[in-house]
Image 1: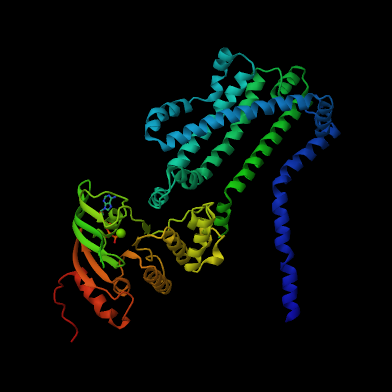
Image 2: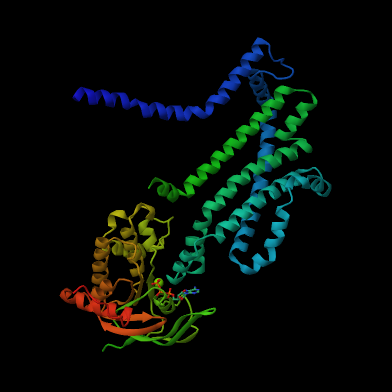
Length: 272
Length: 238
Ligand SMILES: Nc1ncnc2c1ncn2[C@@H]1O[C@H](COP(=O)(O)OP(=O)(O)OP(=O)(O)O)[C@@H](O)[C@H]1O
Ligand SMILES: [Mg+2]
């Protein structure tokens, strides 16, 4: 009898492990298959390198861009624009969201106007921004800032408005000052929604920047891609697309880490 | 020696067209444990909210013997902050070491020292209510208001919480008002029971104040009679 149970255990134990490993590998299965298939068909000659260069060729192109310093230069310019725009638009959206969330007067004054502006796709402002601000840094940073502002605003506003009024009533009757009410109840209560908006805004940040850099720029990853397009340099175009994908994924991961850091209590909640 | 700690006179409270309270009059002595009982919608919570200064009466006066009494409400739902750990909930995450020590003492009082650094979501319903009680006791309140804090608990946990509250109230000479649906609970715990009906304090009965449990049945029955009012004579089986 003992050996049977042992056998059963021996049989059952590795199973969840396998399952676990498979689960982690599963998302990468399709990308890996595509890259391998792509490389193979390039090597066999099914795809001409003029239409679609092989992954290895794209990688080599990236290495030479790095060696010439081109990649670092344009990447840092793009990163600068992205973070500056995020900082400006993000803090503006955050402050407006807070003020409107907390004050009835401000809400009455600003909210309708913001809601009206919100419905304009911010990319449609590109011609306007170029005419008004030229094609310099200001124009691109402004576009990113505008794009980021609204998701941050909306989420901050709703986050604050939806804090449980019973908790605020409790804090008030337990003698918390206005500042304490804000830091101990309203802000942490709104934080999950605010961070969700921030994460979404990061996506908007990259899309906006790429479009802006593609349309008018003399530096940045978007420029690198457009420039390569003029010389029919497919390798660089594809390499730039991959850089975008990596940038998007990395910033999303950073946002996720920030969420995990700030919202430890939520993990405790989902565990129980 | 025993002066009136609190006096309610001709209290009326209206919410638009609905009158929650018609005319409420009662007083509360220093150190007294008062229970408010009655049917749903009778105005118990509203009375408590007015006393706690969460709302203002439409007319009438609420007078305290002292100028700025410390009043703490323990709500029906625990209203703990989910983003703070248990000890932080009690201290409101104060950095003041004195407050932290006091919070630890209060947590010890309700027997939850071992749970100081877990989140409320990891506690049972009764444990959450004990944290809420510890938090309410932090400021050494002169008046403790309990709005059905034990309603969601099972009978045994409820009984233990009743004893805990009684013990603390007696030891610290707290003045307490307990709102409850449970006639037994009121009879057992309170020194005095006020029966509220249709927005007025209709009857008053003496309670047992945690003593002479053998009389519980009699007191509870009397309070129940008050709540239900004169009943049509029901013919029994005999
Ligand atoms: N904020 C409010 N707005 C409108 N009506 C209200 C409000 N609060 C209470 N009322 C009304 O006042 C009356 C008394 O309500 P209250 O909550 O004081 O009753 P209660 O005795 O506590 O009842 P329960 O035992 O069900 O908690 C009810 O008819 C209720 O509908
Ligand atoms: Mg009630």
